[in-house]
Image (cartoon, rainbow, N blue to C red; front, side, top):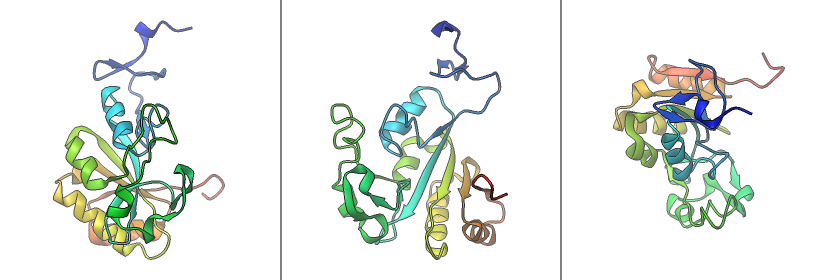
Length: 188
């Protein structure tokens, strides 16, 4: 067993995994092993751990707000009847997205917007923003690019997606944007 005092350090803090020198550590959906995924708690914990990069997923609400959520619906979080694209931000903000993970530590953890994440952390992270599109990517791409621009974080964001159409739309609108096409095993 490795002595915890010998763990690799990022920004002076020990991280809870062994990582070779120079290895890029990206907190997937924030520190999602320790806090509910894609929540402010998970992103704040990633920052406390000294992680410099986070991955998060974005979708559009019915009122065209960019929210941070991986799933199309909230069934996994205890709300099977709620579909992100069919709910307004105000409706989604009323929900508890932390109790499924731990009702003792994360009760009432709200769904967050991309604006809120950028407001809270600014340029302290490199953000890997996964565009979750189900149909026409244009509305989501337009809104995400606007949020990035509003926060002047173009140099801190990598836009990723399994949708080549979404990334094509990004490149049409912002050719200088950093993009990454995600592929599933066996698709390449």
